[in-house]
Length: 402
Ligand SMILES: Nc1ncnc2c1ncn2[C@@H]1O[C@H](COP(=O)(O)OP(=O)(O)O)[C@@H](O)[C@H]1O
Ligand SMILES: [Mg+2]
Image (tube, rainbow, N blue to C red; front, side, top):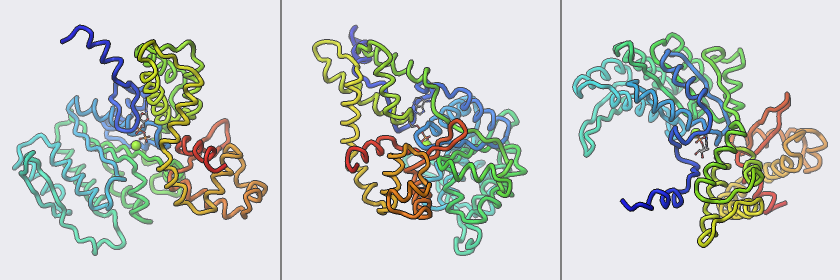
């Protein structure tokens, strides 16, 4: 190895990452949240993890999964949103259970066949990776009124299977973007899932969701089946001081000059402290500094941050254009109103009138924008403000159409 490669590598590798899972050593804060996910699974409890998109839920789940798995636990972690049907999700749960079991293949097939018998599992074994895969033989036409029945059966099977495991081995199911199951599963979904899992004490369940309104309503309203089924944990912004210290350290370590906290503050505020957007903006600033700093060390300044934000938003133009043109004129006007009023009082008569709409139209447009993950609620100091899931989309609207 060449002597200089250490420093050189540090300089060449962009330390800011967005999208994709971060390693647990790259996460700022979130130790408590990660520990709570771990404890839930170790203790066979139930936890709802609720927070807007881009705030770091999946990163927390992954970090907890890594730790638990390293210590010998059986953890199934799946993103419900990735599966087009409940049956496909169920198939994946059963397959993942079969793969995680520590027995020989024959024993695994026997156990899965026994505990998941209601799903009529069929096994395939072989292929390049010598992986075991399971398909389920349920007749979806028989499920008309109970689309989540197979899921309830799978969860029952998992509990039975977990009971055959040594007491020291935790078993957990982590379902990310859990609200998808409920919205796809229809009216009875919640009651069926509750009926299946309320008596389970061996499997720990963690259900995460980005639709904060829906998830909150589902777990906090005493008329709903999930009321008091488990604990709730809300994932808020990262502690500002720690996030800013992290950013500062990474820029300086790369050899860039950061005279004071001001440009770091700019990054955080322009990205509205949304972790994903902060990382993206920091990432792009880093690339810009690297390009400029060929001859002398480049300096991070407020002006550079603003320049990079403009470039970043421009780079996302095709995406934002597509999102924007898919919206109805009423929805577009509602978004403009959210920006103009900085998210407050947008359902007032006066606000509605200013964009030429009756209040109920504004309300239904806002509901739909929440469901599309374009807007979210932000509670602070006892009031609720409407904000953009993606603050750069708001910036794009400001620059492009306002
Ligand atoms: N604790 C954290 N520290 C630093 N960056 C984070 C943290 N959590 C999230 N991020 C940033 O936000 C991005 C999105 O995180 P993710 O876990 O996918 O959010 P969610 O699942 O809530 O949508 C990550 O790829 C990373 O760039
Ligand atoms: Mg996620």
